[in-house]
Image (tube, rainbow over all chains, first blue to last red; front, top):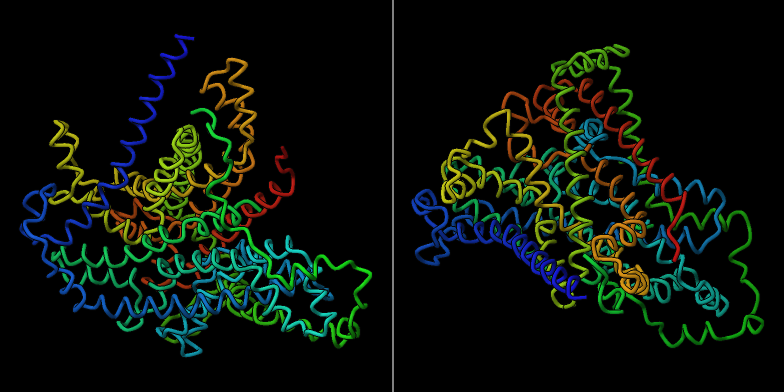
Length: 277
Length: 336
């Protein structure tokens, strides 16, 4: 017993040391990013480890005026609208797949969920030509449509898995009582799906906020560019004024980190459901 | 690396359960026989077709913006585009022939494979060990805190993480070279992203930093689902923490491990952001991956047919991986 006790103690010390070292590896670069947002260029090049001499918000004001306000507005707009569109269309589809017996229902279900297998990059070239032809290239609509279309399969998949496990009798009872399917959906099924709806909203917000491939290919002017693309153009436009870029990075990172900490439970639920079924 | 010490199996899972509204509870508890039979809506062919309205938005959006481009892409890959006149000519498999002779395509494919291999090592192998370490801690608060902290890089975008590491690797102001200097390893300092020998590995390293918390979190959830009695029984039999890891944890999270392997490979073949942000495929195309080479061919060199051929390769690879996932999840689920 003493032997295992000693070994166990050594092991516990080792485990803790390792876990805490890893915390440093994760947190320090992020801290460095935040601190650099407060530095002047001279300070940044002088000593990368030094703390900023004063906490002044000039870089943030600079970043804000050099386009970050536009990028932020575009990101918020695209994120909010595509989240609403995706979650509603997916919830309808999930309801149709689980609560209504449809002719060719299995094929329809395969068609919608099969979209999970397709990588966005594969459709890139035709999509650009299609959106150019439709006059939607370099508009907000392009990102709204793409973010919705490519996330419907995943979102439907999550909501459908949840609806399957809900008792059907409830909807049926509501219909017996004369409620229309539409009412049953809004009044009964959707409220019961609240936890998974919250999870899908969070996962979609994270996706839309961070998406880069479509945003980069389908937008070129400011006013439409979202934060991820905006940051790279901030970087190329303003050469070596790096502290401003760091300030922009913090602006892009903070909302999603806050969202994650505020909604961890739903978030983890969504992630584990998404991969586990 | 041993058992979750308490019998609270899934504190991350709680809270997402739903509470039924009273009318609903009443409906459930009402015996079946007391209800009337189905209303007229469920009958009739027309009625059934009308019910397709539920699926219609999803079907239309997917057909037009996901499936149609996919089909078009295959057609495009057999054409040669003249960007000045906007016309195209059928060239059969010429683009594929060109693709398979293109050394950059093979470099890109090799980089995707390297990406998969290293990601499996870190995001599946190391992440599982890490998750087991976290779940072996006695303090629930610490477990939660560590899982959350490790996850933070996954919440920020790859673009932000990529830019951050671009600066960390940067030779002049970068933290990494200064850090090496400070600990007396200054001779190791180098332009990490600026030379062919280190650029790809440096990008992949960033990606591991960004993504390991995500897979650790999922493994932690899987480990929490293992009944604590199994660990207790193993402990009573005098089995140490390392053997418990290999004989209890590893076999019982096998399903999650399989899924993570597949998801990781699939992700590795779609890599785009971090490469684009950090090197754009350079120096000398040494960090090209399939998606960045597709982008460059299509939108910088305007060779749409060629880009479509690369896209078809990505499609085939990711489809095969997805089918493997389908086969894997259907095959078996671990039951307790």
